[in-house]
Length: 212
Image (tube, rainbow, N blue to C red; front, side, top):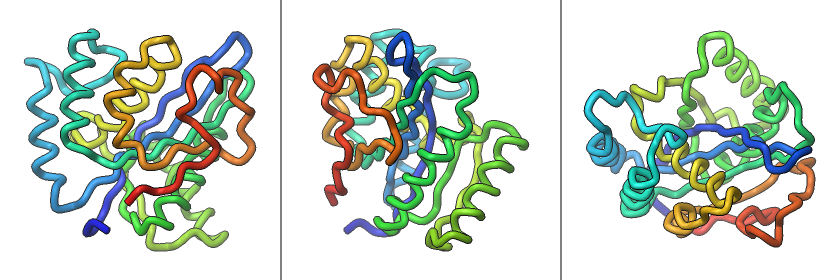
């Protein structure tokens, strides 16, 4: 078991078919002793004037470089997903995914959780959510903070992992294959719909337990 571990969390929401969408939460799990060095490595990937890495803004050549660098850094990554019918509002799905993630992190003794800030109002909802979960039995050691993506390079890892997963669903699996060995947990929420393309991409089985 590594030393003190922290989680760095980002989210994504994408259409999966004409009638379905999937909300995903990704968490990069890192040893606190390695975080400073990993931040510096990630900053070297920025282009001049670029504030942060963001998968949807990157060219294919850049994506290849990013996933290669992350694979070499060997973070542990968790992915939690919720598949549903298409809806305009996704906040409920975010809460479902975060709830599953928090319990998995607590079970792995990963207590500090950094979420990318979505603004003061949305961040306040995240804080109220975890307080409610802890009142219902979630380990009170789990604590969250919010940082802007441009201020915390470690948040870029989850963005790239989820971006590469979405690319795989679009028929470009090479990026996610490079990162596959870093995925320690992939799980759907308990009331997620069954994925219509399980035969196409098998990564999100119901539960894959920790590999460390």
